Length: 232
Image: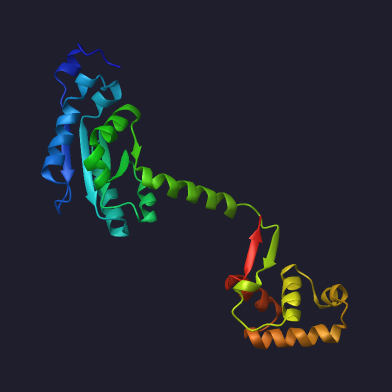
């Protein structure tokens, strides 16, 4: 921390700017943000990093869109590297908001949270350099869990009869499960204790019911239709 008597701090002033063409952030909140930041030296929050980053830019966005992301990319490219950038969003329901984290920004916060807890949000950015709205924490956790599971190989696929939308018999279910396990007709006949001709008949019936070209197509459609529970 810089000593409060340091001349750089005593003459220090943040330039606080708002890119808010639709006046989403009401004037009193803008005033409150400006006042808090420029009184932050009294709260002993100004670090060397914060002195170097004199500009704060708040962008008001309604949600996520590729057009907005492209606009922000261009703006951030032109912005002084010693600036802090915060996105203020209308609401945090859109999970695609996480894509904004690919940009060099210091925070994403909902308008409602900024309105009610602006001091807390700004203090967090002053102290740590970043703030992410709490409503987005769960979305990040879910995304990380999905990526982790997606990268884990599937060990087993089980046919879920309750999800099947085609009228299939119990024998059809059994054959379909064995197909998912990678068995050929001979192996299916052996495991079901059926003659190969019986399995061929069941297979022909399956092809018609599922409007599939061959056994591979049957397996692919079963998975794409969401009739399978995967275990990793």
